[in-house]
Image 1 (cartoon, rainbow, N blue to C red):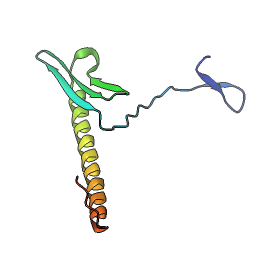
Image 2 (image 1 turned 60 degrees about the vertical axis):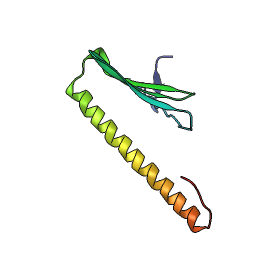
Image 3 (image 1 turned 180 degrees about the horizontal axis):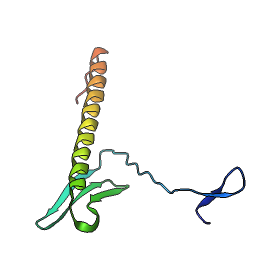
Image 4 (image 1 turned 180 degrees about the vertical axis):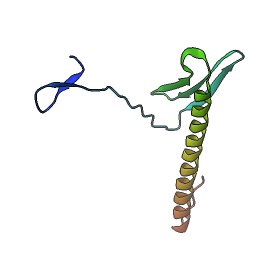
Length: 103
């Protein structure tokens, strides 16, 4: 297999590869950042079904890595805010229906 597909005219056109990783988080997980005095940090998301590590390519931290880390923090904060909103909405709905839910 050459990594190409046949287009409508019969000629072969290159196709770029891509990938997507999804982690569905349950109750068994951990998130850690390993730091070392003179080495790059390693961020690890660990679940029973998958592990994801984030680190600096080639071992040298650049401004791009700092920008990425800030973007990661912002996205994680947005995720947190949305999770809290959904949990609070659900808890409020349960309370409105007479049920008591411990959050």
